[in-house]
Each structure stands twice: as structure tokens, then as C-alpha cells.
Image 1 (cartoon, one colour):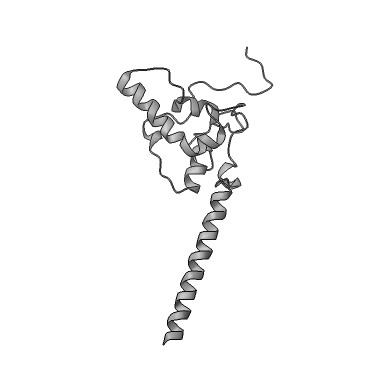
Image 2: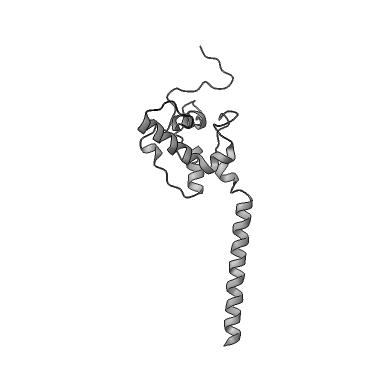
Length: 141
């Protein structure tokens, strides 16, 4: 009986330790997984309003803070508006039409699906830029 209890304890301790090692390796990698980053638009520009690592972890706080400043205090323009995100991070299809930023495998949905986070931003906000972007290499007429 005593041997059986000891084996169970060893098994539990081994499972806990292996789980902790797995979590540690995920945390050490920073959670950067190619699948979650694969759809970042190549036309997203040189830099966002903040560093990439900061945005990956804190963009929601920035959006909520600026939402409150805009809606409650009437302060416009704001640094981290969702409209700015949409304008920079949407991609275009083969015909030059903007693809909705929350469409499957696009900028917002790819990371949020990977992290199992449900977003409701686009129940109110536009998913495509107001004006079509000029393709790289073409000239405005």
C-alpha cells in the first residue's frame, strides 16, 4: 500500500514538473509563434505607434484608453485609434480590394484565434480603410 502511494506521488510530481517546464519554455520564447504572425501585412509600414513586442501584449489597453479619451472627453485624434490600425494592417486581394481586417487569417483574427480571444471591436468599427491605398510602385493620378 505504501509503495502504491509513493508511486502516485512520484507520478504527480513528475507531471507537475514537466508541465512547469513546458510553460517556462513557452514564456521564454515570448509566445511568438510564426502561425500567429504570418498574416502581418507587408505594407504595415516601418513602425507601429509603439514597439512590436509592446503592442502584442498591450494593444488592448492602448485602444481602451484612447476609446475612453475619445468618447468621454471628446479628445481627437488619438495615438492608438482602431481606425489607424485598420488603415495600416489591412491587406488587399488580387483585384486591389481591401480584405476585412477581421476576416479569417487576416491581421486581427489570426492572433486572436491563436490565443482564443474573442473580439467585438468590429461590431461597431469598420473592418476596411475608408480610402483605398495606392499600390506600391503605382502613381496617383
